[in-house]
Image: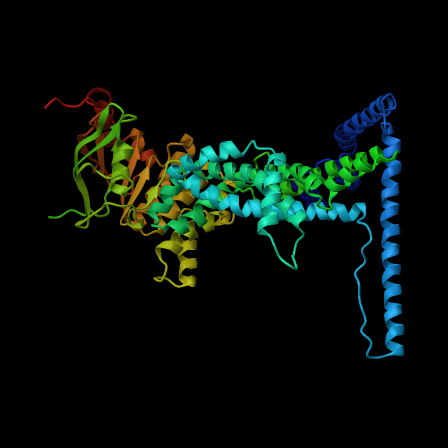
Length: 340
Length: 263
């Protein structure tokens, strides 16, 4: 039981839980307490110092929207955002109750009456926006991976193809999402025309921008992983007379899995950063739009609310990275390799 | 009489920036079925190149290799190779590594149950049944090489090619694996070509030692028939005068006669 917990925390990267588990189960208490102090105590101390500096520093800067928020004000805004979320949900519930009641009454008066069910159109709460952002980045990232991994594998296998696409990779890789966005927006509005679109245009624009920027690390890492495969492993495949496709699926891809995941992890990190900028400009109702709207709104609470979004973006980015790390570790065949 | 494996006037040139580089010149060697042949020579003399040509990984520039009268010009499971660095697939367990080979060689020839039995049999042959579900990263270098040998044997090769199979191992593990290999060889009576740079290994294991001159344009300097009776015991042979005679022959070749004879 204990070992299971320890293993889980080690794989997910939450190594500082390990001494907690050991401490609870009563293994060498003093040593574990020391470990714990080192692993948890020092980061907490650093955090406290950071909050202190923030508190003091923020109080000295006054903008046209008032004083820059310190940790206390940000915390207040965070709880307001949570309250707003619940208030909005309550409103939504009441709206549907009223609608159902109205429709029921109509049907009682006249069983043939046409009833209308309208969706609630209240404003998106902070949590809805978080979900929109996560969904958008997920779709953009998945599309990027579906494109990048096969191209990476093929160009890793063929030197000719690699030298053909390498200049393109090098040129497009450093391009900022903000440069892509206007083009993507125009192309999407021209091409993605439908009376009943499955996705909104702003969503498609943001997702494509994420795709364009998060393609490259996966592509490059996959190509490098594939081309640096041990020649002897390929020779084993030749001795066994494996077909080209079998070689690719049984030897090439498994051996480059660690590099592919390294690329995917970097890609997701970049995608998440890009997403916020893309949402700001394309008005996709996610965290980026939230920040932009608060900035435009310009109330005394705005800076605090933006700061809440900043911290949220940071924490979510960290969690996404941790999820990728966990997947990466569980796919790594060398259990001794140190992956951070 | 046509020999089992016939390496016939093989030369190979590699293209380089300064024109072609002739690595091997006019290598001719005939090997009987069930013979254990070692190829010994200094580093870089092209021992491995000979093996790669027999294995079909390289193509001879002139001359060719005949196995049972048929020319060899591509790799195949009838000439299984044991590589120096084991070359196991690190993401597959020992069993799965052997399984991959067995499945691709015996597809349509053996039933699933027969394949399983055959895989287990070969893993048992190298005494690795206890670790068959371990990944290569979880077992020692000697154990990895055992699985590498099991994988090659499981292909039921006509010729087993071994490229310095024990070169990366420590002396004790090496001795242990040599004993295992002799034991397997006495049961299966395979035709084996082994590349080595270890004199004792060559004398202990071989029926025939092929001594190569230094490159470039390396060729066969001399062939030594080792007619020591089998089974051979490492400890008994240590004081055996004939064993020591063979040993000194090889050492003398390597240290005095390795340069190419001027024709």
